[in-house]
Amino acid sequence: MPPRMPHVAPPSTVILAHEPTPRATAARVLALTLGGLLLCGAADPTGTQPATPPPAAALNVIHDPAAMLNALADHLDADPNHVALQIGPLPITQDDLAGVIRTMPPSMGNLSGPDLYHRALDVMARQKAMVLHARQEHLDQDPTLIHEGQIAFERIISDAWLKRQADAAVTEEALRARFDHDFANSPGPAEVRARIILVPTEVEADTVIQQLRAGADFIELARAHSKDPTAAKGGDLGFVTSDATTPELGAVMFSLAPGQFTAYPVATLMGYFVIRVEGRRNRQPLTFEEARPRLERELRAEAVKTSIGALLANVKVVLPAAAAKP
Image 1 (spheres, rainbow, N blue to C red):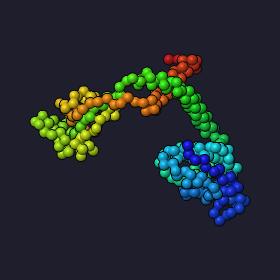
Image 2 (cartoon, rainbow, N blue to C red):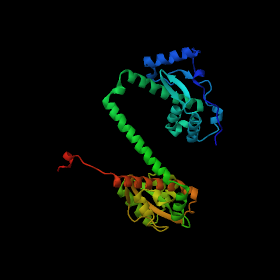
Image 3 (cartoon, helix red, strand yellow):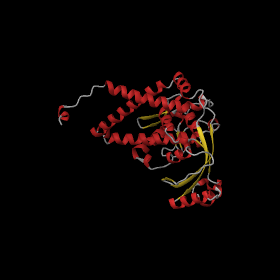
Image 4 (cartoon, rainbow, N blue to C red):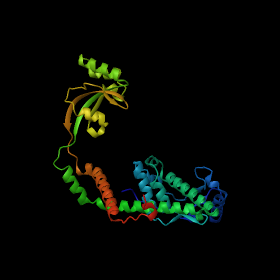
């Protein structure tokens, strides 16, 4: 649980450099908005500096970038309707900023809390400025844009409905039942330890196989000829499961006994492989927590398929008379 952070500054404490009064602040922001200067590409086009942004010290104890983003978004969502900045008549709320932060790539979480806050504020300020200009040009009354907006809204609510069905399917009871059925008292997945040699042509792969049949050392051949990154390790892939490799390689690896190598080159998009299997084993069975992400994905996918199937089965479809004609 990340530490609770102090409240983000209210609008009255948001100041602009060289313009310390609230009236000057409002005038400056509105001037920037109406003049279109927010679109100039500056890192902080409004020049705003919240007086008390989320403290860096409180957020920087979280080293996971994704957790950093979530912590800041949760902090802002604690008071979602609080107005962080006003662009003309359009408010920017902490909920708006939290939404921007939640869409940032995880790598952005390496920035400090104040930097993330200002970047989100910058994104929303630009958007609100463009909305103001679009309304001045009456784009909000354009029939084509209104229709596109309706389509987008329908997509949003349909996605939200489907997510609700999927969320409802992922219960602790359902997860436990699926785990007991699929994993409990079952051995872990099979693995093979394999070595590989990757060469560009089938002729080169055939030559390697002939050398192996003549008694050449696989490790030395891999170091000398393989174009795969494992060449320095003698082609050693370590222990892998069948789903951790391409279908072509996995099928061959799991058909060989320990000590055997491929009788013919294995053709792939990357080139031609020669494979030798060193050993076989079963992993330790997955624990419930280890299997949980996979179980959740499976339950959600099944719920989506079932929900859509049920809808289509119960929806009455009527073709217009003209469309019904052959």
